Image 1: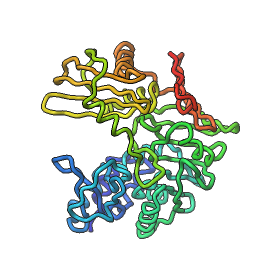
Image 2: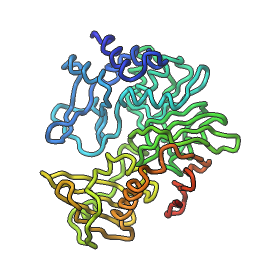
Image 3: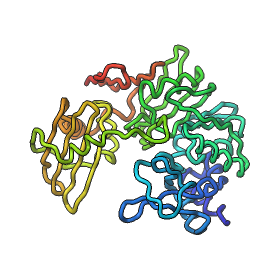
Image 4: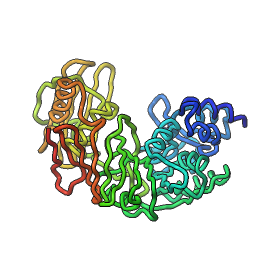
Length: 388
């Protein structure tokens, strides 16, 4: 198939003409890494796409600057049959190339430096790194043995032979690396500990933090701390997982939030889709860690849900931008917590996240600071320290 012109066009979108990542994007046959994927139909259901059966649509999808979901729940597109309608969250994807390039830039890769691609997915990041630095420098790791095997075979067919590793990065990361670039979101505390242990002294990590869109980078010093910052950039990645699928989550609480009775009030601000308000979502995780979010639209009526493992929940519903009817229950007033963040954003014009200083200790605890503001994530205590 004539893919090279499309790949060059994709490279023009994903990297500047003088970027050292332009040639890798232009030179990798991305469609070969994603022969099948999941799309969403007009009804919001997952539908299987098979590249070889529709070569033109295959090339259109593969060389658009977009992510392609390859696994939903426990069902990989490779193993699916037409008519399958999996339910659940995406559990693997081929990340959009421009975001892969951004993360590679944040990682500050260089000749002769070993790099760990954390979160193999379809193998795109490993392909770009191998194209630029050679196979010997690159290791790719994923928790899913099928993903590791399939990506390894497809990379080999393109002439790339990185070291492929199957491991649960929340438990153990084999080897030591000069650079770690993660395209899965790592949870502060235990979710970061093993990854930091695999980073060489003087090495650099680039990752996002779980339930946030914060891109955190830093250098590991001789004491084992990683010192860096929150980049003025944002990205959304799937959470790490330890098994075939994510845990059931807080489904019962979401059901309660939809119908339950609690303390009623009128909210100050319009209902917002918190998951897609990235800076708000990130600050909510910093101030009230562990919150899960939901959002529904019916005609002009919009409803947002917040739930927490401690049993707290909140529901806010309104017509379009009207002040919402808010119902909350449990130990924490979750909608109040969100409105405090929105108050701060309106009063100060920004939140203190982007550009904040970062110190990550060897136990995985993330300490953020900007001016007089301080926050810590991942401490053993269920109460996070946040100071203005």
